[in-house]
Length: 114
Image: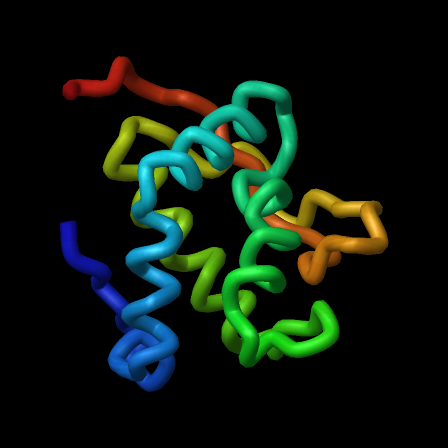
């Protein structure tokens, strides 16, 4: 699966964007996003602290808003491909160690084909 960047092509086409796409497509990170979804939480919630650890350009736990939006857009494409649909946008994330303040929650819409 390749990323359809649309309005985020400036970031998606950069080396950082390519690394983010690869990171989000790692098996363990897909499982994390799906587990968060199963638990009724935003898909990117468990990924935030890991992103900060693995991407030195995020410095002291902050990620620029445009990059967070790109991560959300990438995550949406990955989950939609796996049979998920948007359940609710703007779900608050209250953990201090998470760079995301709010994010989208998904629900499984169709049975996955693997």
